[in-house]
Length: 467
Ligand SMILES: NC(=O)c1ccc[n+]([C@@H]2O[C@H](COP(=O)([O-])OP(=O)(O)OC[C@H]3O[C@@H](n4cnc5c(N)ncnc54)[C@H](O)[C@@H]3O)[C@@H](O)[C@H]2O)c1
Ligand SMILES: OC[C@@H](O)C(O)[C@H](O)CO
Image (tube, rainbow, N blue to C red; front, side, top):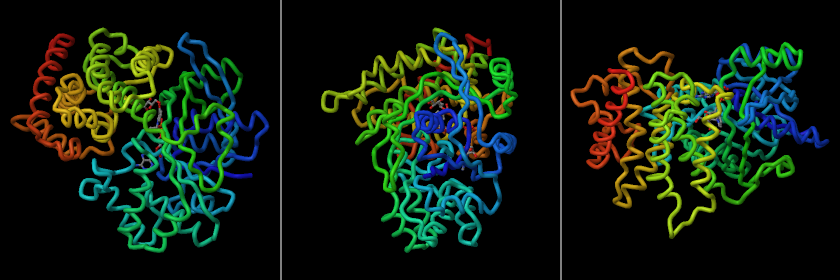
């Protein structure tokens, strides 16, 4: 049997990639299975539950009409427990049966700047990981972890392997590959770099299925519907999509037989997904939090918030994705409307907390590119400027301890964020942040658009909260 070793055994992997491999196995194609574990010591309860259940768990899916379906997913055949030295993950990665190493380590797990360079000065985790790997320890970022695995694989003569990124990142295969090669260069391991260049490929992919963090009521519904007291149950929307560039150096499952789109270039799909779905999702999460909502569907059904999301897509995102010179093969107006319908499904009950997170990597990755494209055309970008302006208002409330949940942001330096909020001119300080804006930092048109948008956001908040 061939294995996909997955790094980052979070909810999304179990609701998406594991489902496609399960579908293959269900139709009798049992040539591939998944082995999965984490690079970090998190989610210990879920990993333990999965181990106790031999990797099996129930996925509840919910349709736009609110119908719920239950499937026991059985494709994760090996659950790899976390160890500080990552020995079990490294052994699995060095096994010739492993033909694909895939990963979901969140958007914040790549540490790249707008020029696709590893941002060493900004990210202490990255510097610490390089030092650890240099000292002979296992790495715990995606780069250090892959280096530990690939060094062992090369030494074992286990052969070529595909490195498959499944995170919401533009050009996710190319960019994480670039980060990995830079990390290896910084280590000074030229033989490993050459081996990686010759023995791995990194297809780009677009992944899609809204998968909320599982709450206790999911397990309760699963038990009521199936009788199984499943400790690793989770829930996702019924919609699912995966588009992958067909560039697998050591073979792959016949994913095209279970609905995966295998393509030559994923670019149009990833741009549509990142700009029309992910950026819009963040918009609704930040605005919804400011308006006092807990859930994404609540903000989506609020006319003013929906309009902000709609205007961003219509005025600024679509015009740069679909141009007379480069027509987009996807019907973007339809995509926008379907996305807003998906967000509006109350049965998904996705939280603003989950979607609002990691703005310091989502703004540069998902929102700044539209501003950059508009600036390059010397066109106005007032609608897209509303998104970062919403986040600035959100950040001010975080600074004041007024966000009603814990805000998680791996790419945010809290001292820098507090300093932005304390500045005499917070909008100018925000527009000057290079983690967010790269080379656009303090651009006069950016600052001007943010000032106008921030005034609109403050008026929106005042109307909703009286504050
Ligand atoms: N949940 C969704 O709706 C969804 C949909 C499409 C794509 N995704 C992608 O999947 C990612 C994970 O989502 P999830 O729902 O599984 O989240 P999750 O919180 O359930 O899991 C996060 C996983 O990432 C790992 N991780 C986090 N930060 C890391 C880091 N810096 N280095 C190494 N590992 C790290 C964790 O160990 C864990 O395995 C998202 O960030 C996104 O890129 C999620
Ligand atoms: O925008 C947040 C994402 O996790 C989103 O739920 C996902 O990308 C949908 O596929």
